[in-house]
Amino acid sequence: MKLLTFEDGIVRLNGEGLPGILSDLKVGCSVRFDEQNVDKASGKKKTPQGWEDADISLSLYLLTDESGTCYDKLDALNGIFKGTDGKANPQVFTVANRHLQARGVRQVVFSKLDSSESMATDDIKASLSFVEHNPPIVRQEQAIAKVASPGELAQKIAEKAINKGKEAVNQAIQKPEAVIGGSLD
Image 1 (tube, rainbow, N blue to C red):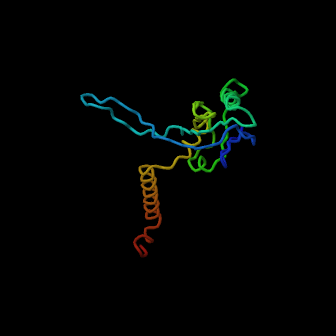
Image 2 (cartoon, rainbow, N blue to C red):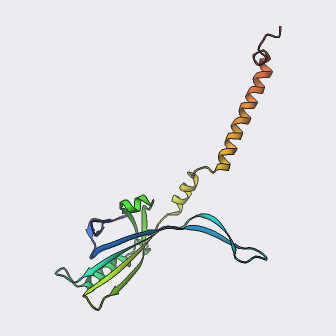
């Protein structure tokens, strides 16, 4: 697994700095809705179904300097974007960044590379987009460890009350004097 970090204006992949200067990092996430058409009504019924995977974007300025031209640096970024794992799939990166960790993002896939060139200066702005990677097994584990809903909590409380009531009835049958407060002899 490759480690991707964003700190102090530098993006690093396995400790090696990527070409360019980091200008901004943006993280977005939204609710996933199940949309259903409602008969004889305009619009759709939307039911929240969880959250979409987070989208992460960052911008790098690629400058022409003594280390190379902006085009050479863009070529290097494109090589990373087109890089694959051992099975010809896009690479999965583990991220180490406080902003992403605060948003619960642990792994990402490099999903898009855009570049734009300024005619006034000799630089290229590269926009790198990543999508949160949640393997199916992680999603399964999260579903198992989910927080109980208010309805589930109410049901558990009711079950405990019923069990306590059953215990009290059994005790009254076995030792009625303890319930009544005196001896029956």
